[in-house]
Length: 173
Ligand SMILES: Cc1cc2nc3c(=O)[nH]c(=O)nc-3n(C[C@H](O)[C@H](O)[C@H](O)COP(=O)(O)OP(=O)(O)OC[C@H]3O[C@@H](n4cnc5c(N)ncnc54)[C@H](O)[C@@H]3O)c2cc1C
Image (cartoon, rainbow, N blue to C red; front, side):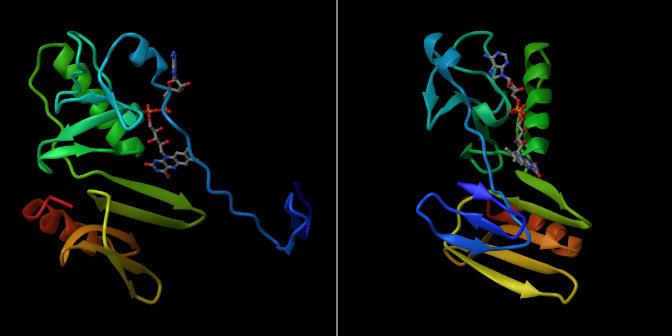
């Protein structure tokens, strides 16, 4: 209901004293145009193949709005990262221009918070996660069925490189 200098008031009357507010926000793709055009959609996204081709001829989708097939994973992957959106846009453009291009990269993001750069690579979805403190950095290993399916690092790029190898060998989350 109200954010003050030293406190946050919620609409149920609860008051929390705080110096800093961290707001975790998100966006949702708007697929109304695609739906009204009759394109196949699923899970609030436009279904595309590995070339970013939608269900109608000469229609492409890329980025957050697309539910794209990843060749290496062997399944469609929901990705909400700027790097993947840019890659998919490039693939859509190349495909439209008649070149051969397919989405086969492991999804991931970098996120800069003040002086810290968090880096993630993975297929999304996991059963357990394991935090390893490197004192000055950390690695979070995400696992499913005993296999690594993703990693989040701070000041531990070597583990990011390792996960690229591990995930290539074992893509399915
Ligand atoms: C708060 C926040 C923080 C984030 N932080 C990170 C981060 O640290 N790292 C990271 O990798 N990713 C981050 N992301 C995700 C990243 O921003 C998205 O994955 C990326 O922007 C997707 O790009 P896009 O081009 O697919 O979609 P968008 O960037 O959403 O662009 C879509 C554009 O299309 C326009 N549009 C929609 N409908 C129509 C229409 N009918 N006609 C014309 N224009 C239309 C929209 O207005 C918008 O400008 C963050 C997202 C949020 C919300």
